[in-house]
Length: 290
Image (cartoon, rainbow, N blue to C red; front, side, top):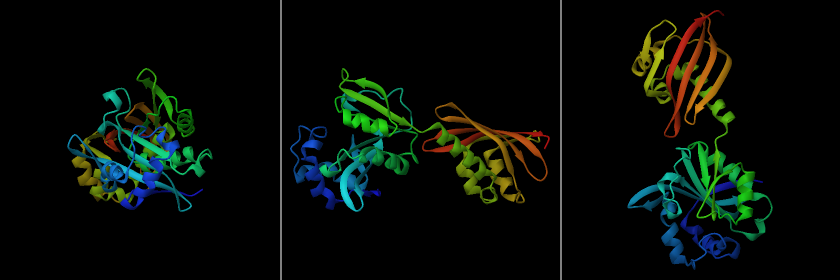
């Protein structure tokens, strides 16, 4: 099955209107609204341009038509969960700080009950959520057992209910193994000669408050690294015994043995998730035997 997510366009509005007025969609999406083309344009018009108004401010809002084998089958939207108040302004306190939210439906009845829902979610999370957020949030109606089952198949877990149990909150947190793999790749990137020769690439990986306790006993800050590391002669490194320990939600401790032509050292780094990317905030090297 080939799934694609096509950014919403005005040409999709007639299709969206048909879906929104379909009984299986209307049961859970805009139950009290009699959708017309005018209402569709009013609600979804700004989504075409990638934003939604919230208290007079434009907030990033991404909307897509779901297609499979070039046939339009449904609709999905995503946004920063903290940009838009939940129903009854219930606080999201206690949930991950880097949190997307999404809503979706399968509009074409021929695609219902065939296992598409969880596959849509898994692919959308991989392509559009995981690169920018650490977790994703959904809040289906508790009586919508089919939707909850689909979310669970895609990896979402129930975290609480609100409105006397009427609404179920669910989140999918980035898998720990994926975090560890990401940190490993970032560490390797910092050992790559192309990265080390580029102040810009280095600057993107190091936090402004970065500090290093060098194996020589010297202390370095970000500006020091950006000045002298690009002047370093190309070196080959071997990483052994790599480990990444998730200390808290946004902080990972990486440890490993690093060997070059000249020497070996034990290395440790602290990585912090900063906005929508990981940054190294601390690094230390201690010489050891090869």
